[in-house]
Image (cartoon, rainbow, N blue to C red; front, side, top):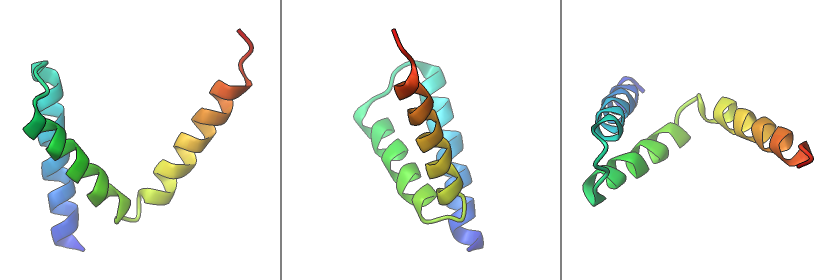
Length: 64
C-alpha cells in the first residue's frame, strides 16, 4: 500500500508539472492515464466516483 501511494503522489506531481508547463505531450498524457489507474486502485476511488457523480447530477439538472 505504501508503494502505491508513493507512486500516486509522484504521478500527481508529474501531472501537475506537465499541465502547468502548458505543453501536454503524448508522454505526459501517458503519465496522466497511469495516475488515473493508480487512483482507481486506492481507497480514494469511491470518494472520487461519488464526487464526479454528484457533479454530473448538478450539471444535468441545470436548465439553459
